[in-house]
Length: 390
Image (cartoon, rainbow, N blue to C red; front, side, top):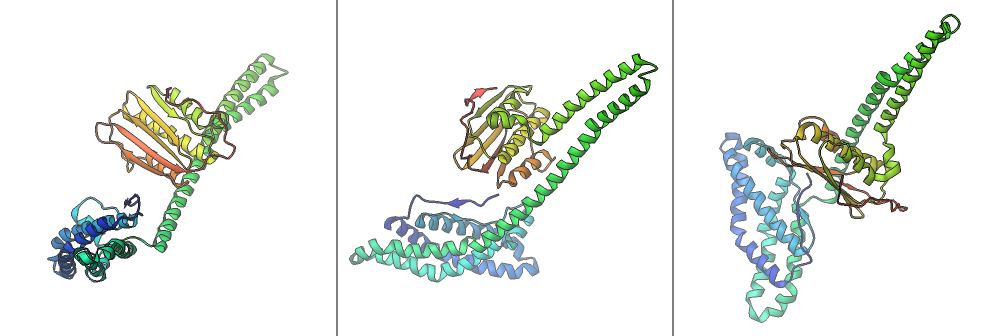
């Protein structure tokens, strides 16, 4: 999951940064105690005594680092992300992740800075503020001084450009591997559908035509019957071929766009589906991916949710396509179980998309996703009215 970040509308003024300086001075004793105890506890881990101490100290270390991230973000007026790895369930498992997380080591390094140079800068701002004769110096000088402190905090407490590029490369490598596996599975499915459906029917039609050819002179009645069976078989094979093609790229997308395509899916549902969708024409690969995401979500609702109603929403703000499918069913959907939600995440990852699932026991279940994509330059105005029930 992406790391959270604190932001502010703009750089803070002298009164706010002075309040931050006072808070940093008051937190100075805690920083010293925390640094010493954390280092000592890490050494005592070999004797098992340090483990319970670290269970308490590392969350406190993360708390004080997050507090300074928020102050740095509001001082600078720009985000300061928290690059922590997700924590698993269980105290010991969470401790192991915290101890091996590079962000924890960044926090310890930051404590050294906060106890030395950072503390000096905060004290200077507080002293200048308390001295009445230096009021002009404080008013004009305290924001730049605290911005220096905040810039160093941000440099230490968040990932750098190189780290972000490494994370990006790692995420792209994982998504590419998932997409390759998904594409291979899709090819196998198409091959299986063709083998079990149209291929078998066309082979039967060819056999019937061959028998009819042999019986045409001696038994024309039987030959005529076989030709009729072959014609019916080929008609069925054509229907199955259309189904296979529709599973690759539904023709309704090209004809009616994403708005009309999702409404066609909603009409086929057994329960009422309220559709709120008014998006422009998007690149064909994105439309296809989102179409199958909606189809998979609605299929999951029909199979597992026991819902009475569904709400489907699609919106595009010019840069990001956001969508959601919400139902009032039994809840309990878990992406870690089954392949449906995992397949949705895989489709979206190919376009840098993200997915979030909220499904407490008893419902409701809400699946949200976002896909960054600009609209087509020659976007057609052929859209259907929004907020209409399907």
